[in-house]
Image (cartoon, rainbow, N blue to C red; front, side, top):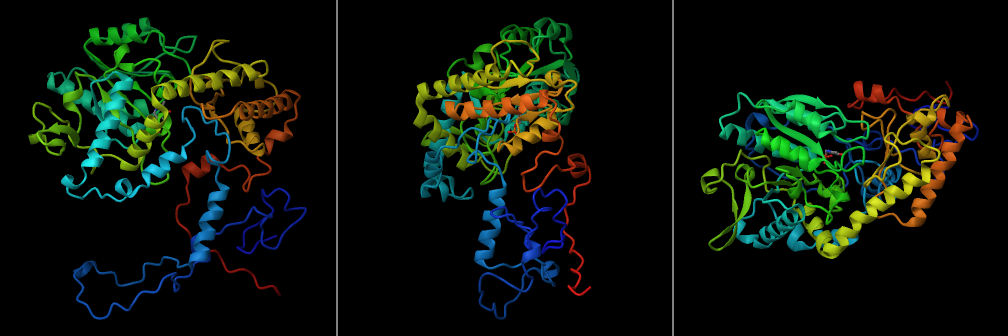
Length: 523
Ligand SMILES: Cc1ncc(COP(=O)(O)O)c(C=O)c1O
């Protein structure tokens, strides 16, 4: 059967084969067309006055034809976006156990403060003299980030974790250049278990990446690092807690060995949420570390623009931090925009047009001030407690790749327990969608076969964790009983069934083409 948009409603739409509807909708599950399919080129939602005669100043650049955007009225526009939002799983819809991504609750207080006109309505091109409050806010947030990490400086402008990695590694590159060692220090060591952005960042700015093998307990062995060190090594990029959800207990020895060999220690701080208020990365010898404000300090992932990934820097790297930065001047705080005004510092350049993401800064500072030091420490403790609660609640059914040892903020399972069941990690994850959960992170870290990385965060109640554990236990027992059908076609109850993800990634269809007209009823 074709629905009103001419799409087949039978393929993959469970339930519709038996009880087809004219619209293709299933009660509240509405088939939402594209804006191009519901809008009209000759319609607009607002009335504009005729511009009258005016002399165009665009010369050859003046547009001669309509741009071709569909026009919609306000109610249609509202419905379109509300319906789309209802198809999306978000942190406000349910437990979002995506490991490594720390999908923690975004407190509404943050939103309220970020929307206060004094913060929300300022513009990056306003004269700096009119925004002393913004500079003070950035400076205060920077102060707490340095305090919590035990580091000397912080570059506030990077827009995400990966961007922060780029910033930190560019500072390291600049420091090596200042030592006259650019030609020789060309190698960056990265453990096998690292997030892909680590080797990608190092390679992007011209370093050669060498992989450190992960030892049997899921951590890095300092002896393996020492064996790889030498005058050719620029830096190590190490994540702590690491992507297997384990604390790198030899981190101090590793940092000392890297420093003794003349290299720098870049720490991937994506998992800082597990250790805030418990340990300061500066104390274990870190030279640069990015902090994903959207993971550790509760700012939203996306939604409202780019994120923020400030990078804390050691004293050795501080002079190389990028422009612009806030500094104490003779008449209060000022924004240093040019290298000539940077005193003894030697900024490696500029990463962003303006000084970071004000909306995220406001939210992160609100989180810090509303939680206080004890609250932030408790959040980390609760994140670790929740992950261990899940680990212990599932480990009699699902297998742990590194044995029964406490984890940090995320619990990692492999797929050994699924052997000979006919169910794969992907099938299991898809079946979770039918149970109303966003799947956990799967097949990452790469060092673990069929990895399932579950990060509940601190913001789930015990009842919510218990229900999640029971749902996963029920699925696990079904897999072990050989009920493969529950998995092979899953998700059965989602608006769309299983996608060809490889094809979608390799041959993405990014351009809309008008469908053929619907056949007339009589034909
Ligand atoms: C361990 C790790 N490093 C780096 C990143 C990159 O951070 P972002 O997504 O903010 O760019 C992530 C993101 O998930 C991560 O988990």
